[in-house]
Length: 411
Image 1 (cartoon, rainbow, N blue to C red):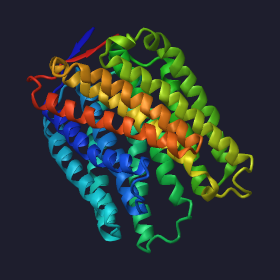
Image 2 (image 1 turned 45 degrees about the horizontal axis):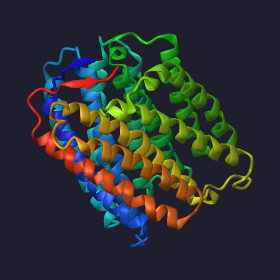
Image 3 (image 1 turned 90 degrees about the vertical axis):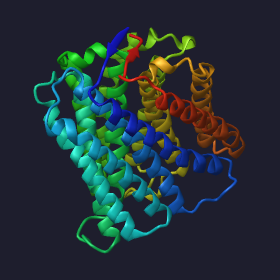
Image 4 (image 1 turned 180 degrees about the vertical axis):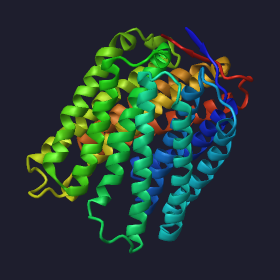
């Protein structure tokens, strides 16, 4: 049992609360789409995706960065003042950006994407400044590598917006693929590993990374860079190089964190099981990505490869395994720790939201892989309503949480 405090209690609560509210929009569209009640047009689905990946996941990731990079570190001057302003700008710009996608306005999309990039870049500068003098632990290295990839992905998103507006036409068409590839394969894999390791083994954040820890971070980071350039060049050989880098990095992570995962008291509740199941979904996601890449480089999608031939069920299965299975589990665990002293408020909800969301997700992904509408329609509302329950419960707990964020992670 480990107790920790943070300099940025209010900023963390602001980012998590805003993320939960924005996530409501994502979940609402997801339930209706999963039930096949509404045939959403592409702009609405893109708003659904960006509200989830930026409004929920990235705001939550930034909250985690504020926590881990201020823990035990001096925070003075602009480094103490900047996070609140950047957080407000980030929240407002992401809401604006999501709205621009929803109404399919390219000018507003470019403006919203640029504002979001500024906020992300600002947090990245803060992170670099805060990293100096801090122990280069494996979780901190992972968070830093994820933040680096996130910043690159955000820049690519803005460049893509300029391309859509008729500018930068000299850039290759592979730009369409590099933006989502960087965000999912690079940023979220690293973030998922770092977040779960930090909270399953809080003491690891204060100890210098071992050689295995460095390899666990560097290999997936390089794999993400390689697959980004491979997608940009539409080069199947480069894309295939991603597999050994990513797989070896994940194996190192599993060997290092396996004992912590096995020690998690699954029936007892608490945040630890969210981090453990996040790690399991991370393995499943990397397996799906590896399967996709093997098909890609062996000519299953044409020669030269045509990204348009990738089956939609594969993309949706990978996205939900990552967005819900890996990152939402990790962030729900984090919120659970932030409001640790308020778990007595509706304690039954912790079990209902955990099992409902994760069993619903497994069934939903199976339905996608089997291309079975009935299975998908059964499990989508189970997953979605469980997440809505979590949003309501965590909102009440955040609004009534005592002063001082106290984190308790089951080691």
